[in-house]
Image 1 (cartoon, rainbow, N blue to C red):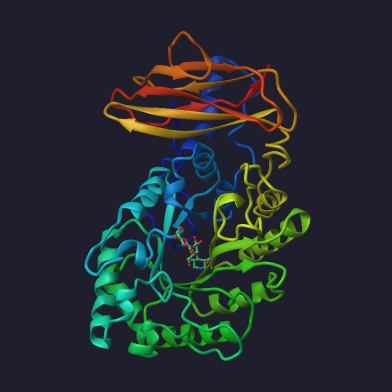
Image 2 (cartoon, rainbow, N blue to C red; image 1 turned 30 degrees about the vertical axis):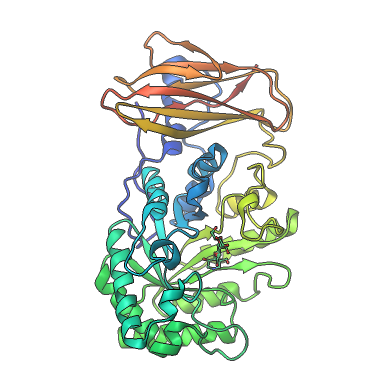
Amino acid sequence: MVKRTPVLRAPGTAGPAPRSRTRRALVLGASAVLALTGVTGLSSPASAASSLDEAAAAKGRYFGTAVAANRLSEGDYVSTLNNEFNSATAENEMKWDAIQGSRGSFNFAAGDRVVNHARNQGMQVRGHTLVWHSQLPGWVGNLGAGELRSEMRNHINRVMGHYRGKIAAWDVVNEAFQDGSSGARRNSPFQSKLGNGYIEEAFRMAREADPNTKLCYNDYNTDGINAKSNAVYAMVRDFKARGVPIDCVGFQSHFNSASPVPGDYQANLQRFADLGVEVQITELDIEGSGSSQATSYANVVKACLAVSRCTGITVWGVTDKYSWRSGGTPLLFDGNYNKKPAYHSVLSALGGSGGDDGGGGGGGACTVSYSKAEEWGDRFNGRVTVRAGSSAISGWRTTVTVTSPQKISATWNGTPSWDGSGNVMTMRGGQLAAGASTTFGFTVMTNGNTSPPSIGTCTTS
Ligand code: G2I
């Protein structure tokens, strides 16, 4: 009885991944559980969006995050990712040094882990990045112009070919302009050996390599109207005038007190959009805390929503504890995966509601989040994290509903009981301190049906 929602996509974005989002199934599944058991107090599937991705989708946008492949084994990381985001960008795994550290030897393993996880959850994927001066292996810098051009083409062909059909938008060229008032190109092997034409060449190569994905130019400190963004603007305008293939411009949006959200952020997004490209906020993070951080985040969201061609927002990481700005607490979830005030301001700016108060694991009495764990042969393991809100609880219970002919064959870390059909398991557990969590697990024999289970809401006892 697990219903599926249709794929919700930003206007015009590609993305062939089937929508099989676990949490969407869970939200809708709650009504199925209600019908089967007569239990009251489960969340209503028709209520306003209570997660970032659903709220963004209701506005025709995606809400994404950078994902690190080596964190995908951490339950809280995965459940937060799965519950809140519907777009993923590999934080490092698709960069040149990660994929082709040695000339001619391509390694897609880590990138594939991010892409496969995202697609299994029905998320779209942004590709980051093909041509960039940084995280570029030394051998590339040692090539002469002719070889560099053919290696740039080869890299674009191989990487885009490998991920063809799976990437909604690629950052084809990243950070090609200098900071400061010159508006000049940044020095790099590409710039110094191939000259000003290398960006255009890269975009033309990318279009040939995969005609069905969006091609973006991505940069930072281009968020407001300034010399650097003026230079990018002139390039995009020129590309559009001459038919050089470009579909989107990414505004990284790394902010802090020295580089706050510019007052002309929306105007800048709009002037690029008016050139006929999509604009995307691609690496958002804002150092700080509390209400000032929350206000800045809300301003970013409002600016995007005010620009019809602003198709989505990606924050640069799930949790403060793994941010590249380690001291800056710049993200929406703290190091314990609690929702910060910034989370709530973003959700609210997106028109969503609900969730919890962001303190101590949530103000609600308890919450549950599901993630799929190991999968082998004819079965898979599910994992549910139960978290107390801002008060201690003396016990909890929730339900797990599987779809016939699925059967739960094993459970751990909780006390299960069953309804008459054998499809609805109630799981109970003991006390939890405020904000504390526990995880229970179970094995589902698929019997040919791999749909995810539905998890009811959490009830205290
Ligand atoms: O620097 C922030 C971002 C600016 N725009 C482009 C993005 O691609 C860039 O992302 C960051 C990653 O968040 C970091 O995780 O890019 C950095 C490298 O330029 C990444 O840092 C690197 C470390 O410097 C390496 O020591 C480490 O091996 O991450 C690597 C993988 O963990």
